[in-house]
Length: 363
Image 1 (tube, rainbow, N blue to C red):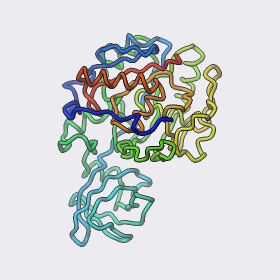
Image 2: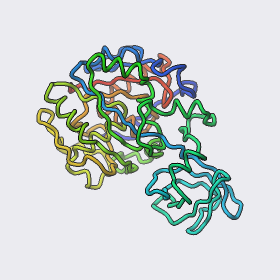
Image 3: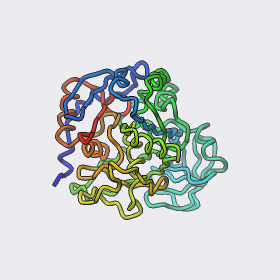
């Protein structure tokens, strides 16, 4: 049985990308093919690795300026990271303060507006804003860069930590595989006859949280909202009928897609379930039991992948659920070998880093 230590590795700190490449699409691409062979490529090579019958599925979530600083009415400093906008003027947020603020506490944020603590939602604080929450965040918040990026966000980050096709505001972390795509690449793919579709999954701050239990079955995922719209469902059915591959752009797209076809998504999800029957036959048209909702789906080795045939992704943190997800797709040993190669070849890691194209050995 796999444990947390199976997903650990030593990463030289200098390989953690602190800034994006000079232009979108200028990254390297490590290709792990269906025979578990490794190929060093450039991201601009991606179109020739795809077939006209293939379908790329992008996550069109938009990163909101979710980070705010301020002070309590008593003068104590607070840091707020909005996790979810739940209503026009209500958010659930992480709040850091010397003393946890109780219900009724007023927080002066960005020296611009007051938010009121209404209560708690588990680890999150329920905050009421004085007006439209998204508008206030856009005007006064900061881009929530990941904790391993050490500089303060700039206007360059406001642009580059956002995909060019972002539409639906609600994420507090970027679907980083999509950061490599520029309009020129999207046009090249379209010219090659490669189809595309969109899902929405609002990435939460929990994506950066390491797994803290050695027994993976004890880990509980953070919840994230997602939607797989009817047009995307139809495109997937059509792709399968043509014999094409469903290729997720990013782990968030993959989680949304896999969640949508799970008939038991409402059941408690406390870890990977190696004995779970595949919810969808890979030869029959897929049935979308849960096209939208909240998902805590934990994809790790032993999970039977139902829908996704290949994945465009970045390199992920040690001991993270994202590293476990890519290992479920490609196999634990091939991913270990790929990461060892990437470190030796000095690939750049994490959100602003280089990319991988992973083909499932099932395809």
